[in-house]
Every structure is written in C-alpha cells, then in structure tokens.
Length: 83
Image (tube, rainbow, N blue to C red; front, side, top):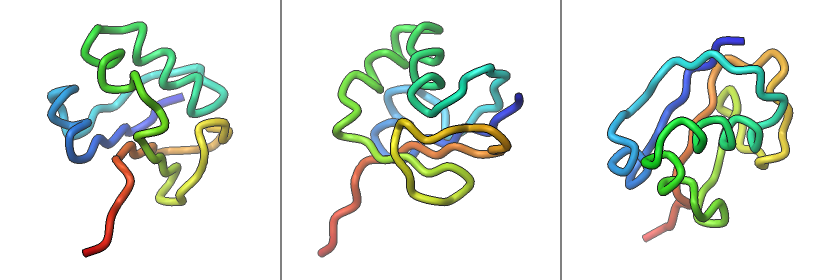
C-alpha cells in the first residue's frame, strides 16, 4: 500500500523531512515504524522513544498497534501541551 507520512516538530527536524510517500506492507503503525527504523539511522533515532510520540491515522488520534488497512495518511508528532 502507499502511505503519506507526515512528521511534525522535532521529529521533522531529526528525520529531515516534513512528509514523504512510502510503499509498505506494514499491518500496524508499529510495523510501519519498524520498517522506517530499518531504512536509516535517522529514523531509528527519531523513533527511539515511542512514549514521547503520538500518532494519527487518517487524522484520527490512535495507538501504535492500530491497523493500517485502508489508511492513506499517518502523522507522527510529540504530545501537545496547553499554555
């Protein structure tokens, strides 16, 4: 499947991209993260602490064990804080 991956805040800085299109066979978000980490060290560093990240699939906030079947977009970002 083809997914549009969006990176926000410090994740964008560590990976060096705001977005990319990837071909994947990942069944879950966690599988996608594992595939990305295996690509290059910059991904492994960016995803080294999943507790510091949130994820949305097709703009719905979800967990890393969420299925990707039928998804078109996955966004990764740090937790948001109010002020």
